[in-house]
Length: 102
Image (cartoon, rainbow, N blue to C red; front, side):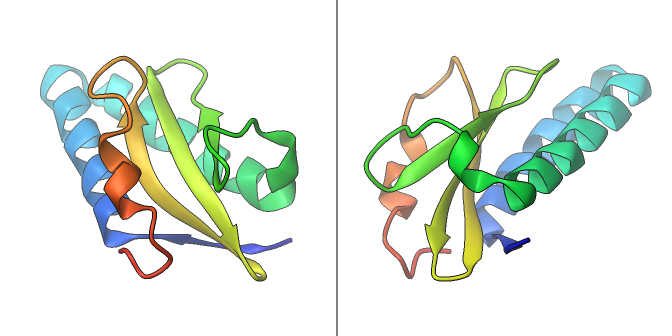
């Protein structure tokens, strides 16, 4: 199982979304967090099963929330570059695609 690194930019995305849900419902926020943790575990266990969104990145679509976890593979590590809302600002994260972006 590969290790998963969440970049600081993706962590900010996640935190913004989590806070948004928490302001509305603690239960929704807890569900979002649990769904994100499940995504990371699924990505780590079999990253190749997820569809590509470009030639470098793949995505995991959360089940109950309109968010995608965008990640790429680098050597033996999986790097989460964004936790992106599936319907807003498409590909806003694309400037994070350089291997050194965090």
